[in-house]
Image (cartoon, rainbow, N blue to C red; front, side):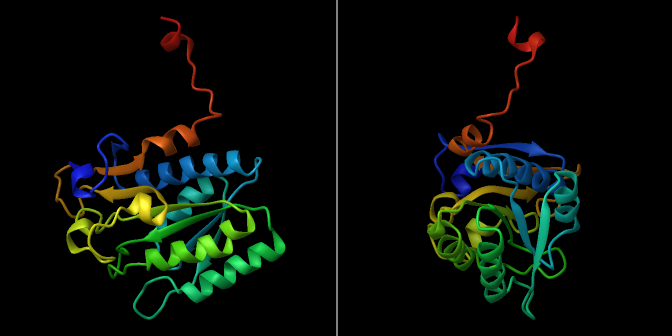
Length: 210
């Protein structure tokens, strides 16, 4: 259903039902952390997120042992892209080999503000990829993830994964859908799942030895 909603291939879209937006954020960061460490030779990523982000983002960063840095927001609540560019220039100057994990808010908890995903992606390509670095984008869409493909804030026919380099999207089930039990969704793609678990040993004797 969500592959059709997000206009993605049902053959490549993956995901699972979570216990809410917090778990979706944690798992998205966990997968991206492992992916970025793998492609950058074991270097831990720096997490960048706005100062209006959900508190679960800071909790997840602490649990996963990631350093976080805050991006200023505009008066309407979205990430200030000029401040993001300045922060990335600082990272390129001081810690050139560090990968970047970007948290993009599409519907902040208090005001529903939308970060400018196309511009954020463009800045990351310019400031990180162009110097040979690596980045990953996680979208915290707990509030508005159910309606983004309907309201189309970035235009018609957008594929968030293909067009804007998004790796994971967290959506809340009880916030907008009104589910009677707390739940959510984490969406990703099959190639990213393979990439982020490539070096993870998940073999268990009582599972693989049967």
